Length: 200
Image (cartoon, rainbow, N blue to C red; front, side, top):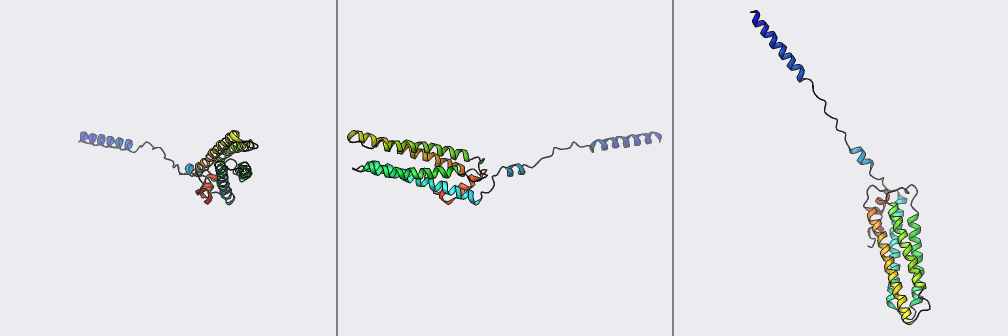
């Protein structure tokens, strides 16, 4: 009888030990949601003045491109008054280039540190230099005749092509910025109607 009691007590003790070990669980690592940080990286919605600036940049870019193309057409049209025609068109090009440069640099207050500002401004410096070279080539045409005039016209045509290429870099910078959802100005460029029709 006493032997049975001992066996029952031992069995109960073993059961108690087994239960105590099963209740101890290793805490699992806590999984933190990443929704907060990713939301914080999105740019703020653009203000009215930022969208207006974006539209002005695209409109000025389109205008300058058309004016440079007009100058290039004047080169190929020739004629006895080609020098005067190019001089007049160059004045138009210079005015529209100044308008674009002024607009690009007049970034709305609070947008100076936007990630896309630097690229757009850098493209502006490229076309600014190309317009200066174009103006010099047109000025060099004055008083030329014969083969010297033909050579000078070819130089103007080449400079016009370079200016259009530089403007293409500005167009690309704008298009790239418009795809950047983290950039407030990028969103502004994407929202501005005149930017959707920006020529390539």
